[in-house]
Every structure is written in C-alpha cells, then in structure tokens.
Length: 485
Image (cartoon, rainbow, N blue to C red; front, side):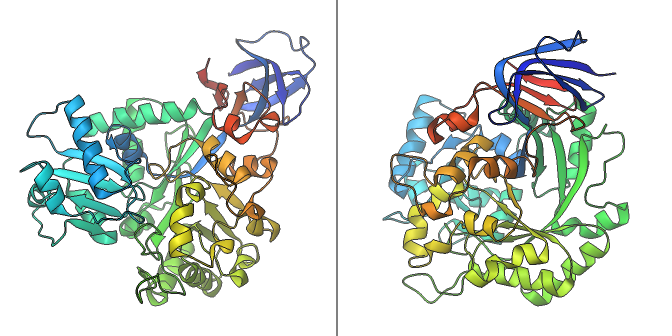
C-alpha cells in the first residue's frame, strides 16, 4: 500500500500551509501542518505550492528524444547561417565520416535565401546530411542523404508527406538505444512536473510502449495515439480511446486516432481561405471532406476519439464540419488560425481545442508576414476560452521543448522575449492556463488522483519569465515520487 506524506505544502494557488497524505494513489487527507502523523515516505515541500501534475497533450516522444541529440539550428536566420552552425558544431565535436549528420530546428519561412541540396554538398562534399525543420514538416537533405534512401529530388527540400516518408527511411539508432533515450526524455519531463504525455509518434505506439514498459517503469503516464495507417489494426485489437492497456498498472492507455487535414504555417502548407502572399496557393489540403468524414465515422463508431490536425482557417472549418456531420466529439490539434464564426463551434460540438501556446511567440513573425491582416484570430486562446471551449495544452515536442511551463507562460503573456505581447487580448488568466496544462484539473482536494507536483514558489506570484524557470521540487505519479530535489 502506498503511504506518502507531503509536509509543509500549500495546496492550490494562494493556498495555506498544510500536510497532505496520499494512500493507494489518492489524496486522502489535507490537515494542518504537523498533525498528519507518520508515513512510510515523507516529502518536505518547504512551503512550496501543491498543484495537479502537468499533462503534455501532444508530443512526439521518439522524435523529441532524438532531437535532444541533434545539432541545434534554431538560431539560423538564413540557409547560409544554418550551414555555418552545422559546420561549427561538427568542428567542435568531430564525428565519424560515415555517420549521417543530423540537425534540427530551422525555420525558413523568413529566410532571405532558400535551402537547397547543393548548399549542403558544397559545405560537406559527399556527406549524408539531414536537417529537420522546426515544425517537422520540412526535411532538407544533401545529395548523399537522398542517395542513402534511394530518392531523387530537384532541391533536396522535402515537404509534408514526402518529408514524413523520407524521415521513416533514414537510418536510426537501435531500438534499445532509442528506448533508453525516450526514458531519459520522460524523466526530464517529470522533473518539470509532468505526470502524463500523449504520444503522437507516427508508429505503433501501443506496441512500442508495451515493450518499453517491460524494460522499466516510465516516469509519466503515456497515452498511445493511434496513427491513421493502424486504424484497422486498432479496431481488430479492440482498442478504444481511454482503455488501460493490460499489465500496465494504469500507466499506459489507448489514445485518440490521429488524422491530418493540412500542413503547417512555416512551410506555407496550412490550408487557408486566403492565398499566401506572392502567389495563389492557399496551402495544402491533405484530407478532403470526402475522405475525412468516413474516417471519423469509422473511428468514432469503434470508440476511438478522432484527433484532427488542422492549422489554417479553412482546414479548421473542414474539420469542424466533419465533426458536425458525423455527430461525434473529438479534438482539433493546433487550431492556429480560426474564422470568427468557427470559434464558437468548438464548445457547441464538444470538440477540444488542443493547442500549443509556445508556438505563438515562435511563429509571430511568420504569421505577421504570411497571415497578414488575419492575426487577430491566430492562436485565439481567449476567444476560445470565452466561447466555452475546452483548451488542452501540449508542446508538440520537438517543435517546442517538452516543458509545459514554457507554454503556460506564453499563454499568459503572449511573448517570450523583450518584445511587447503579440495580440495581448488573446492572453488567458494563469488559473485557466494551469488547468489547460493539467487536463482540466484545478487545485488539489481529498479524493483526487495523486498525480501531483510541488513548485518552489506560488506561480501566481511570478512574472512570465520566472514562470518559465520555476523549479519543480517534487513530482508524484499515482502516489510514487518520480522527481525530487
């Protein structure tokens, strides 16, 4: 039987000092300090704030774990500068000549020059180089890397489906090595207060996480998302969203069923009502209504909640129309640009707005250029909240770091640097941001699941900058301590 006592903690924002007892994975008592007696394990909160554990509602865990070991290119302001960063890293950390050189995190939407395979060939003749865009929708390959996967391409810059299929063909670390990297990444997330992650990796996540669990207990609960190509298999297995997977001790559950309607903003493939500047393309429609509706119907009929990727305003309209036609609830992942008339439809249809607030400050300049005149309804978190929609926060790691505090601070402040807030009217209160980052939980009460965290300070007393760096002194998963400092 679990028997844990959290001494000297303050339950909830602005809470009073208390002792909190946990038994069998539940909060069983909240008492005055010093009155709770003894326990098998005691954690001293040192006056910190006790809050529900954080949930990253959208991450790609293998890609995030791998990204943590790739050459960082986030600072590149041009293709030429990306190559300079690449060369500087290789000079500082020489690698074997035969290795695939992998970088990640570049954003080319505002670059004055264009990425091209010839630039990589001139910089690293004959080397296989693969550079991933920050949004995972762009892959920039050298001629040797293209040859490695048996492809030809005029520029070496692959977008959307080409990007994703090529990614699957690239050499990867051995499975046991990847699993170790993933375990480290989940433990790092636990150190930031995370108790659950929804894994959107494009793979058989149920099989992968069942294997990983046999090798060691993860530091967070994992919701295993069903990829589109595995829908029939999931139905045959009898999987339904929310089901606890056998022999997982409640740590593994079946997640939603993922579909793509469009691309992304940075690749200018998010599907919009209006064309992008300088051309007549409104973006890329990945899944037309004639295909989307039957897939939603089939999944929902078999108990799988649809999670539909939609970024542009027309893509979101198509997704909402499909949910309305099928008559099922579900999720829209990203919901970055919305028509005013569509904002109120989320609550009316029971569709969750699963958003990634850290993307807003990252993409503000790109949005100002490519969604000019429409940014008042981009990343519209306050409008969604006021309409009654349910918000759930994720990181989309590795698109943004798997650190919910970054997203919480961005949702509250609408900036992440010294620039003024971007459309501050769409900022939301801290209490609502914390709830969106905790799967709707607000505060801690007797009877609650003991997925909890203790922060070193009360978040409501901190600036957005300090929120991002807020130390988490303890994380508790089902009554077990997964992190403590």
